[in-house]
Length: 450
Ligand SMILES: *Cc1c(COP(=O)(O)O)cnc(C)c1O
Image (cartoon, rainbow, N blue to C red; front, side):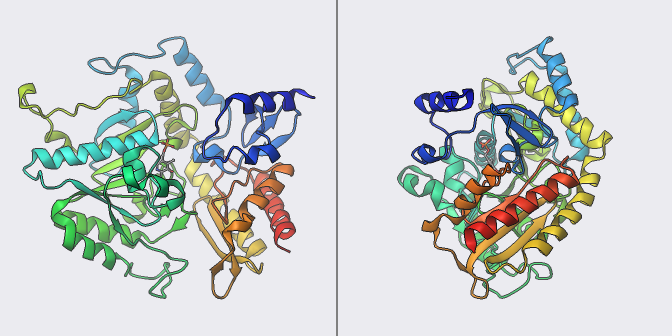
């Protein structure tokens, strides 16, 4: 038995992996990764894998990025952590100052948490407490869209609308007002999202009218519902939602955990709509995928509703041990510098148009390709049984998973979302790597579906 196999077996003895049926690992053993560089990962056999899923969408600028590693190492020898109540450090201040320069106008106050789900929870609590303290204690509920994904903790899971993750927990979840969201591939209005007027906002209008008075906030993933299969919708929907939120005094919480940091071709997906949410949640690309950290960023208006003499009891009594962790912050500061100095997003946009046109050219005529959608470097291919009726494949066949396994053999990590195959690579991916990813995806698709 070689080192790779030995470690894989030992792994299975101890580790319960995320989002996995562990029995699947009998056939497909965990791949033990030894090192990473750029868009690539290497196992103990020296076999390399192209990380086109950015290690769950967080790796922004390649693995072991020289500049981020250097910044983190420097921080490691200076200050590893400090309590963030009453204490602070230069990196955290610098990070917020720099972020205010790129965030939608008006987002100025930063609450640090340590993962995406916890940033969502903080945002929800913050919104509820704001209304409570501004004479609207009847506002106790949250709205969210069908097919939403906002994380795995009980509050975040409650607002999520993907049954695969939440169905079984329904008895312990919050009572959410679920709004039928945009579904551009199977648009019930028969429209094309490139030139529609987001007529589907009607469902939100109805819900706001009915439940607006008891609602604190609506949480949405702006433009891309990533976990649902990279479902993309029009910025017009966001513009209209912003107007509705203003009309009914409901907070718009933008979950930019997956869409922020240039993934959609602009710094934030909200920028496509030119809107400022009341609270924005950031994580994943925030530290370039180096360290777990997240932010719930908000406006002076919300912040000021908590600002009072201590005995009024209006403080936001929310904390995480690792709030503002200096190591994570050092990575996050360097990420912002790299984005700016190396013009990463501008360059990624040039690559994105090449990537997308080549994907369309390669896959559009395949009999099982129902939809190809893209924004920024994100490209998704939805496989269907019948192109004309858009009838899905039988999910029991696990077609996406079969393609994933084949692609792994060829050294590409094409982890699917059901029967949606997607690419969401580091923004630093190069042309040769894009070509390779497409070539392997095409071969595997043909092998599984022909
Ligand atoms: C990943 C993700 C989350 C949850 O973040 P975690 O760090 O995994 O808790 C929330 N919302 C969206 C849109 C995400 O993609």
